[in-house]
Length: 135
Image 1: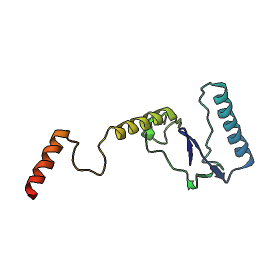
Image 2 (image 1 turned 90 degrees about the horizontal axis):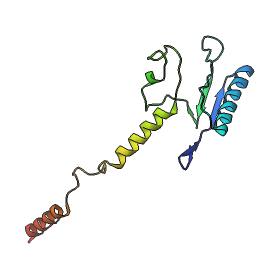
Image 3 (image 1 turned 120 degrees about the horizontal axis):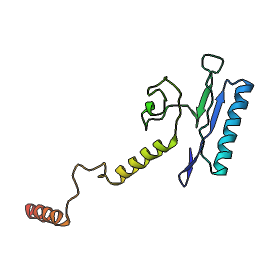
Image 4 (image 1 turned 90 degrees about the vertical axis):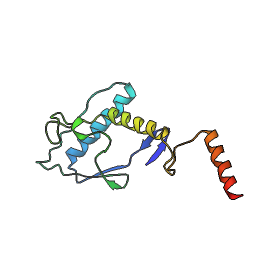
């Protein structure tokens, strides 16, 4: 995964497609690209005919494609739970969760300490007390 200014490159391989499926997927990707260049937002879709002959194997950046873990999956199913209705994923809720996680990490204590930060006065008092014990 390459990053540059929060932008990434995904290397995606989709194996076991018919010619028609490959054409449809490429067309959908072309619509995504055109939508981005025009600055317009649209839902796009692909009918996943799993009870037919659509049995892809997808590899993303060298690993088998996996589900995102940032937003509960039921938020993206129109039926409110997995495998009910249509699946419509939107990256905005995921982006919001990533921002929230970054804010929490930026405002949390360092992971390698058991103590909370102390005032400079408290640190100075502890240091002078320790020095007195050594004498």
